[in-house]
Length: 235
Image 1 (cartoon, rainbow, N blue to C red):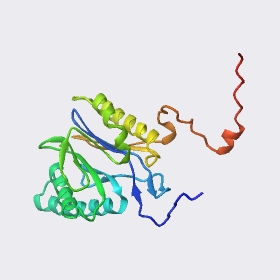
Image 2: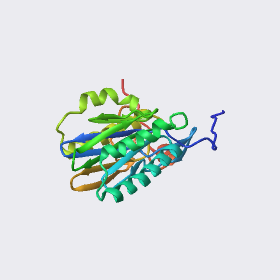
Image 3: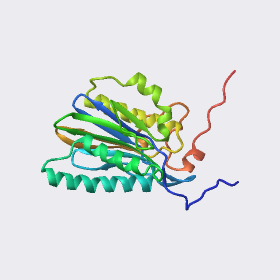
């Protein structure tokens, strides 16, 4: 059986990335699966990248393209901070990514979500999809897993959420996408950004809630083979 498993294919973060605002800051979340065709190249990658002390970016699409954009923007923001003598705002970081993405839209295959907190506007989320459009949103979702989440967020997101409510929403949404999207998987990472600083959290894959038709996690195929068969039904 030919699975077309091209191990030399470009690394793609067919993924689930999420940014949510809450009353006091933002929460960013992502899964951790990086794939190369049908092959999982990295099951524990970190798709939430630091740009400055107060701004982070969630990366999806081509791993190489998203890393390149992040590295350039981090360098420019470092210069910007030195020149101004104060941290860059979230809007400045998002506009730099927008400028790079739009100027190179024929070559880049990456969608990004920028989130952070600054003293001028508080917590902000910006979506920069393929093509380099810049959209300020109360929440943003991206990657291949986002197709399964639009209706869920329409129902579940609300204004004025607490930090814990926002983080629980992000973790639940990523786990839902992992359950349905073959290109999303692994663990869930979150980054909480507010006036007090940045907090990173990690949720192992075997601790995530299981959804409809998902199998219980097993340590080995032998665990499945050696498990007792179900009792026959009595009619």
